[in-house]
Image (cartoon, rainbow, N blue to C red):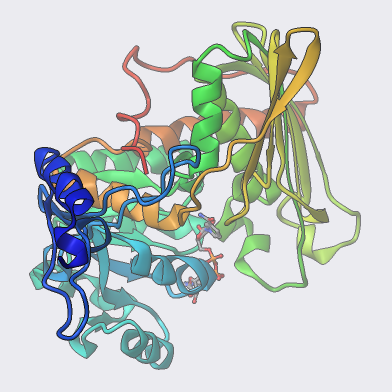
Length: 425
Ligand code: NAD
């Protein structure tokens, strides 16, 4: 009796069949056939394997079920700078619903090389002035905009005008007026608009959101977040008010602000802020080097944040509640997030560190956008999310200038700012 035909094998196979798993495989000539447990099978259009490890261990991840490349949502990547080349283009390899199908760049030599690297057709590589050629490319349904902040509005409006859905980098723009115009442009041609708030798709941050929502921490009292880095010499667009809109605040302080909102699920009502730049440093003639701010929420929750281009790198976030607290290490980094939860258990303090399967947060973000395009869904981080942060950042800047607390304008509507939560990774 071959291995696949043993009594145990037959029992397992019938159990798997009852679970709707078409199992088995012929195996290679000259060897015993694989057991159903080893060969796995197809269940509801996905490859699935029965558990091979004992129940004591957490289960492994099922194999991904990517759409065939031709059925995925095609993205034109606009701007081939660091975020596009170092993170986003490589992340498409981990995507299941999204793929890169075109490039828009001002550097033809770089764009041709990148197109070859990612299998993008030479005729799908365009200069900025030729963006409108994407209109007639059925392989492009969406654009991903990774240009300096002040350019996001123009490229969103141009993409929306030719019927392409828009995923734009953060910060959404450099003024609330520009954000509102981007929302209006996308509404007019009924295309989705999403801001690339990758941390809201990253699993460890999402686990922290769930911990807060579960009530395990009790009512929230304080958040302390830092997004600090040491920047190099100019000239670079990040030191230009015209292109960047500001310094550390819109570039990296934004992560702290956004986290205070998505972790608490509340909206701030008032802010006190201080900005500082080293005197005589030409890099900071137009934009701030550092911005510290405290947001007050109606519930009494206070969020304190520090952002700087002139301090050793740190990207941590701490949340204190009445009944427990959490620490998100490397909360805003590209990878390596760790969550620690602290609360009382019996007569002792308890520290827990959930171990999650690592996933690429850029791929999760791109796939979320692709799902929203495919299913005509409102993104979890739509334009309204970017506009809200921009309005708050404008109040932060006003407070830093006036030296006084500044009120944050209330939300214009009761409707939730965010779309439905992303599907579990
Ligand atoms: P970068 O400087 O590395 O790339 C900018 C790209 O824009 C370059 O290819 C450059 O050639 C092009 N460009 C076109 N016109 C330009 C002009 N007038 N001046 C300067 N560059 C011009 O920047 P980056 O770090 O890739 O940032 C791009 C966008 O992505 C920004 O909005 C930034 O805030 C955002 N970003 C997001 C993340 C994230 O984690 N989500 C990380 C970094 C940057």
